[in-house]
Length: 79
Image 1 (spheres, one colour):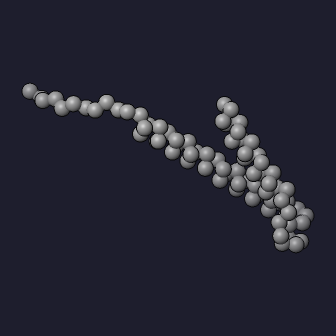
Image 2 (cartoon, helix red, strand yellow; image 1 turned 90 degrees about the vertical axis):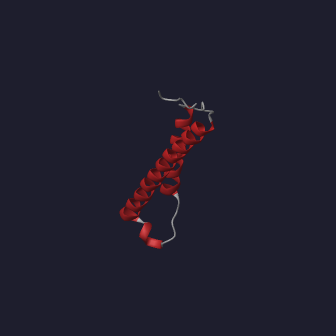
Image 3 (cartoon, helix red, strand yellow; image 1 turned 180 degrees about the vertical axis):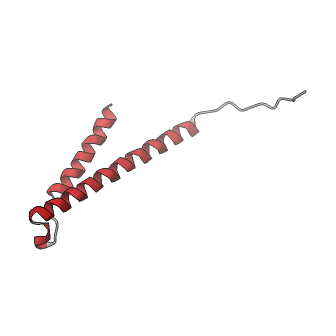
């Protein structure tokens, strides 16, 4: 639960970064069109962070499963 709150906070910080960061480009980022562009970039950032989180969870599970010691199978003769 604590880890999920941490990732949610990171996504919100990334959203705030893209929303409040002044972009170079002059008048393109002013007005309603600039607000639309900032929302779109922030939404893309949230998607990227969510996909990164899912990839890291899958990698962590793979590494933890491969690190556990498994029983070695013994050969049995079928009669």
